[in-house]
Image (cartoon, rainbow, N blue to C red):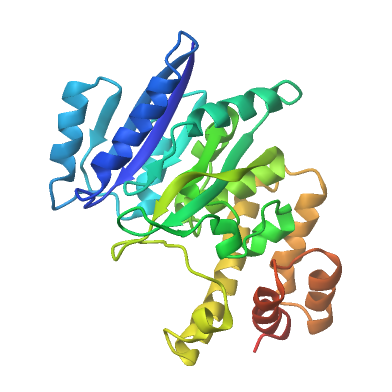
Length: 318
């Protein structure tokens, strides 16, 4: 029997966490068999509302729901690192506390894992599209990948500069989780991005091109879905602040690349190591070197607008 864990990072989630847990349990019910053992493992980041109380009510009623603890972790990334260290499942699904999973999500993911594993024995990540909805689950856009103009099939050098994997609709096999446990994922920009880099460097990232969760947008979202346009980029926060944020985001990708190099340079033996070292070194080298990396080493983002800003802050270094 294979183990399936859904790891859920919670913090002040009393408003929506019941709906999320119920939607995951419905997925379990649709797959009840002797083939899988299902669990929801939840870590509460010291909530000051009724989140832990609600989780405990579920854990009493259903032994598949487990509250690890309610101690302070210090944020989403740290909370997920704690959860990663406390799972030994064959397949690990990542979950936020405020979304809603469609009933066939886990089944489709497990089918995809099974298909890939017929020909590959190594780290695998599967992710899918999401439907963007409002607080009451009414649709905003059926596809977040279209809404945000996200790259569905990024290469490793593209992942160095821009994340294309949304953690709340991501699942990893045990090979990938075991690598992450030994990594510096808690120093990364975000856990889902770092896991995508690992999967791209050493294994397979597979995309299911249909929305399998309702991605709820509300005032308390830590990371939300935003339309990608000139108006969205420069309108709300003011141009000087946005330019500062965009420049800083490029510098953060260099730091993350350095962390990844520290973790994995000795085990990377393919062209991805060259891409990684080229990107890190390019920040201290000439304009022409960065231009060459941008034009010919695939170090770029998806879409004209993103690449316009990336060119300005990475290649030209304004």
